Every structure is written in C-alpha cells, then in structure tokens.
Image 1 (tube, rainbow, N blue to C red):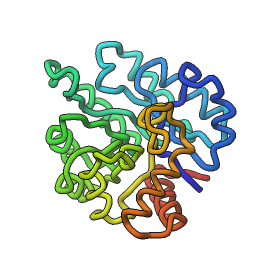
Image 2 (image 1 turned 30 degrees about the horizontal axis):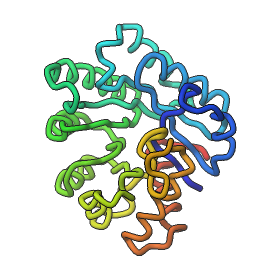
Image 3 (image 1 turned 90 degrees about the vertical axis):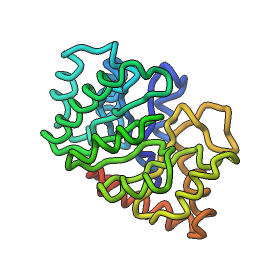
Image 4 (image 1 turned 120 degrees about the vertical axis):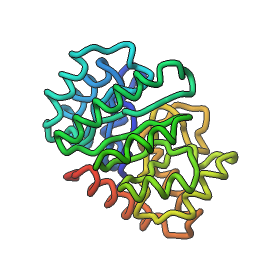
Length: 248
C-alpha cells in the first residue's frame, strides 16, 4: 500500500479531486498551509477514509494569519484524522528580511506539537541550519519534507528522530545530491511523498502531480538502493504508519 505522506489537495487545483482520491490505491496525508487550506484539509479528512491531514502555517503565509489561525489548529488538532502539525518551518528563498518572525511562528507551532504530542511536517528552504538549531531544542518527531540539503545534515536530522521526505525531484536528472543521500541512508528513515500538485516525477515532469505518482518515487528508490519495489513500498509505508500513528 502506497502512502503519500505530503500532498496538497484542493478543489481549486483539481477538477476531478474526488475521483483522484477514490482511485488512489493507498493513503494520503494532506497538508494545510494557511487558514483556507487548513479548513479544506479538515473537510477532506471527514469525507474520505483514505485521507489524513496535517494543519499548519507555512512560512510564506505568516503575514496572512492572526490569532484565530492558531486557535483553529488547536481546536482541531485532536481530531483522530489530523495526524500532524504541518506544513511548518522556515523559507529564506523568496523573502529573508523576516527571519525572526518566521522563527517565532515556527516555534509557536512547535510548542503546539509538544503540547499535543503530535509529529510535525517541516518545510526548510535555504534555511537548513536555523531549522536544525531550532528543532534540536524540542523533543519532537516528524518528517523533513522535500529534503534538499546535504547527506551530513540528513544524518543529523535522523539522529534527532526525523524521517527524510523524498518526492518527485528524486527522479530528475539533476538531482544527483538527493540520489546520493537516498543511496546512503537507511530505508527505515525514508518517507514517500509527492507534494502534489507540484513537482511531478519523471515521466510526468511539467504536468500536474497527483498522489498516485508516489509509485514513481518508490520505483526510483528501488533502482538506487537495488531493493525490490514491493519491499520499498512496504517499509516506507510502515515508517509512515508508525510516525503518524495511522490506522490504514
């Protein structure tokens, strides 16, 4: 059974979202990013058995929130289908003059995760050292979504208890660094994801992504590690079930 541990599911992005979800032979964890998408996640997990959710505030959304945003997350965090706080973290790629505010919002959500004993789904872009320095101060677990740093940093996050989220970028010809990381780290530390509707794997690069393309990520891992794809799917699914306390 495939488990897409990180995707974005919205009727705004898909004309056939209900059909897409029903046809997915496995489980999806849909991540929220802001007030609107957090509400959509809650609606989807109630509607579909194979959709679980994460609620969070993405670093690019921090100027579009208020206290009600945090209140909504806290009021719904104990819903049995909400399995994590995410997508949260730091992003210095587009905007880096608000680093302190990003850190503040990140830490507030880490405090919520600590209070309610929830794993986290972490976004880190051009901010890996700050992300690490903050996370090492908390006793949490979770996934480093769409990991794009070094093998050394991957090993440091694994020591803290985090899994490495691997998506469609692994299949790109220019993803040699990520491919080396996947070769080197233990399969027990890897999660499959798509980041749908973004980052479609080969052979669908440039087209809208969807959770069923998790298979092509598993296929590439199978090739890189020389392990049968069924075993890759079985182990990564077990990793996800244990981390997010899923009930497939």
